[in-house]
Amino acid sequence: MDELFTPEEASAFATKHVGKEVTVSNINYLIQYGRIDKMITGRGLCVSKNQLIAYYGSFMGAREIEWKNKLGQDVNWALSFDNYSEAQTTKHVHRLHPYKGKYIPQLVEYFLDDHVDAFKTETYFKPGDIVLDPFCGSGTTLVQANELGMHAVGIDISVFNSQIANCKVQKYDVELIEEKTAKITSLLDSFEKTLNIRPFEGELLQELAEFNNKFFPSPEFKKAVYQKRIDEKVYAEEKEKQFLPVYRSLTEKYSINLNVSNDSFIDKWYFETARKEIYYVNSLISLIDDEIVRRILQVILSRTIRSCRATTHSDLATLIEPVYTTYYCTKHKKICKPLFSIMKWWNTYSKDTVTRLRQFDKIRSDTLQICLTGDSSTLNLEKSILSSGGDLADAYRKNKISGIFCSPPYVGLINYHEQHAYAYELFGFKRRDELEIGSMSKGNNRIAVQKYIDDMTGVLLNCKQYLKDDYNIFIVANDKHNVYPIIAERSGMRIVEQFKRPVLNRTEKDKNAYSEIIFRMKEKNDE
Image (cartoon, rainbow, N blue to C red; front, side, top):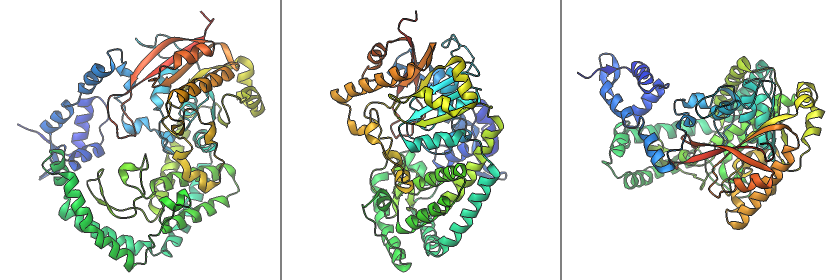
């Protein structure tokens, strides 16, 4: 006989069954998206134990087998970290700001900590060491070095990347941040009332709720799509057009200005009401004298406005075209609307940031981490470290830098300045796109690949002069152009080990089998 579970009971059962945390939210997701049936009983909403077992059994172990068949049997599945929940891979300050293309903290921890296993047969770093990341990005290596009691230095050509990284490892007066964000939230609340947004959005949301309940009932519609009993594209286009007159009528009723321009990124991707709020909050932040507080509030605002761009929910990671009307959302399986106000997300992210800073404060070690803004191929690291003074300078004088753990840009994949274009524009930061290595704008043709080899060689040659003699360098890369053996040779190094890992949690829509290599390099003559 089938047993029925409440969502809480289902969460506990699934966690034990799968061997990793399955939250109540995860169970509700399965219900909402038609993966399992919801059943109303005398105990309230319940789900079937047999359906849970069938759902998890449909992919448990199956992906490992499938991916190994596609990627090769040499894939180290332990490095997939598939037993970690999203909450664990985005723990504390790691989710202070979205960052496209970053690796998860567990991967860094695997190579930096002191454990050994069948694949990692020796330790490479110890507490008190200095770890270098010459492609620091959002600072994952720096944060994990702190957790493990190591100093760390990062370098990034992007001034905003450096700010994100430094904000993650900065020590704060969290109460002061909470006080400042609360004050801004209160002022923004008053400002928003002058823009006539709330009555407009209130009526729009009511109309959307009635329309979606009628034509996209949840979870029935999602289940029908999942089971392919309905042509989602045709049906969605029809209903999308059906609702548009309602949307246009309400924008006219409340005199909502839908005019946008291409004069700047913010002009193109935000409605007038959202733009006014963005500039208002930024003006309040600019008045804060404390630089440390001002910078973390800039990160909160940047995170906020990223979520408020006029695009679909499914295209948030990679912008395609602005969306200025209501639209069918492939993620939520209903008609959704663009955002006219930043209030909700500013309030949410302000509170979330405070929570995450407190979480990290409880576990952080008394070590130092810093991300320097500059070119990793020319920057004088020794001068920068010694000028910082304190424990970091002392550690460098004693034993220099123990090694590198980093993930350089891939050839022709991402424009790193462009992914935060809104922040550069709003805060007036100088862009240095031309110095990005392997940017999408440079392409991936033969000339671009050769340029990548030259640039990466320059970085390693510059950085290794600041490393101790017996250094270890770890580079995480999807080396489809087979450039790293060449880069190692030209840098006077040798590849001593390779770890092949499957990459499961990607922000992009492409969910095909995908792997990357962690190259371990040492000095060529260090036999």
